[in-house]
Image (cartoon, rainbow, N blue to C red; front, side, top):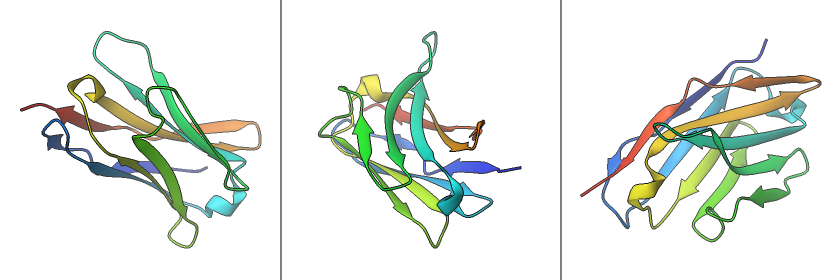
Length: 115
């Protein structure tokens, strides 16, 4: 059973940057794909972006140009670099991983963008 743990959430001012991490309890070489999502209070969970086993990335329009996904295969960790953050980016950020037919989720990390 795979376990995912997000970290790196914080309070940041508008225009600032954060890098979130998603550490897996097993080798991420095994994952078909991994993704980042977020959920703001009172809203549904929203797709941010994903990365396939081959390293191809895909982003939602709201993330394009500001957010980027990367991986360190040897640390079994996926990252979400977020730049030029806006108050509307405030949310709990989740990562997931697809392993066969199973999709595992982390517990989330809070990002608050406020002056």
